[in-house]
Length: 433
Image (cartoon, rainbow, N blue to C red; front, top):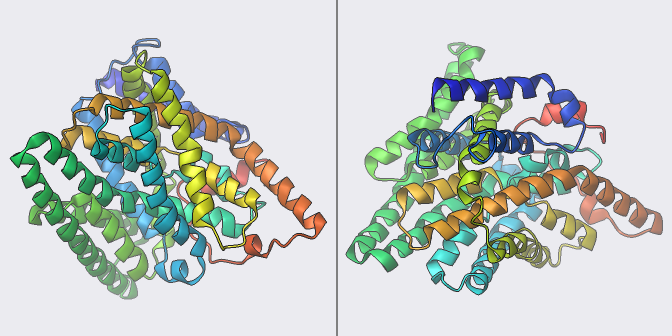
């Protein structure tokens, strides 16, 4: 990326920041704005920036963002609170997500007969994680029962880290199917990564957190350097795991889990970063998505890609949610709300770039195009429906309450977990609050 291109990106970010207040009161979301901004500057728009998906800068930024997203998402989840009263996201993660992957793979085999089973599974796993930040009002509006919005928040915080080792495992079989002995070696390599990565991450997170606890108690660490120290743990875990043969991304996630549950004062420092530098990285990824990834699939979208994208956002997501919540006494309106607001965003973009760089699959182009189309539809559809969806759901609950229906399942109190990205901004500006 040239200096001129970088200048254009930074000007776009600065202009958005200046008008972020009025924008946040409407239906436009930051990902929507930056996808459209990137598309407008791309070769199929004004032609100001010509950035290839193979460009090293794209992959470096994507990998840095993935490391930080995995770490900070995991760090904001309190495991003790999760097991105590967040049974809904546990169901969504342990039952709903496997069913989503299975349904996504079956749908892929039907819609794309040319895919072998492992390629269909790769596509399904890439599109399994959700990104609650695409419809931030859904998880930040106090009008939505806290148990429901926290379910989406917690699910979004953990499913990318859970899906990643599954993706690596499935990718190893794809390598085996097309690479012979090389693929067999890849299976052994991935097995080693799946063991050493988490172990290294937990060790780095636990030891680093114990060290910072002691430093804070003795007054050795200043507040200004606390978040810098914490975020350095993510990269220490990544590099240390890589040195011992483990997977660095899984190590970053495991380090986040260990840090968030060992550090005594994690919340403010971690989320100060997530609401500033973290937001900046996310916006850059969505800009790159618009300027480099979308143009590559432009003109190559077939009817079956579009059909699969719609299935992935609807039936493939909603039906597993209904099945996973069986016996929880949730209203069907609640299950539908949880099912629809499972946007595909940042994790899917980063995962497909990871597969493109490190894996070898025969139908690479088809998988890539399908992921990109699914994400752009999700950015638009979930962005535009977030506020109307909240209004419709709240109205439905009020009607149920007036009829005397039992809403105790929805209104059950839970311990709140911090939100990803600009939660305070949304709380201050959204008109539905």
